[in-house]
Length: 80
Image 1 (cartoon, rainbow, N blue to C red):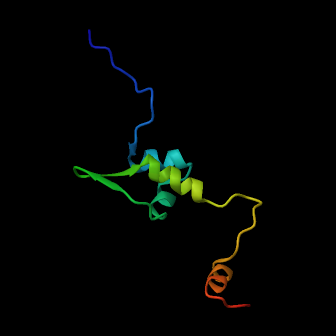
Image 2 (cartoon, rainbow, N blue to C red; image 1 turned 120 degrees about the vertical axis):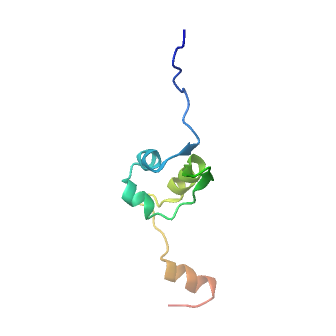
Image 3 (tube, rainbow, N blue to C red; image 1 turned 180 degrees about the horizontal axis):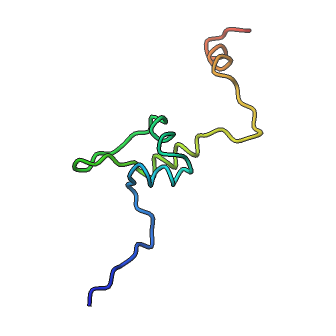
């Protein structure tokens, strides 16, 4: 008797289609995000931990953030 087992956990390494679905974006958008990929054999896979870190670093709507120029100016002691 060979019963097919189903996974009860999310795999850590995901192909492009699965990684895009995990983030809730299209595969085209995923390719433009410049996320690191792991190499396993000939496959290029996205690490779920990298995807989580990317999502966690996205800005939160309603929070105020310094622009990159303001942040750079402040870092180098320059006033606008």
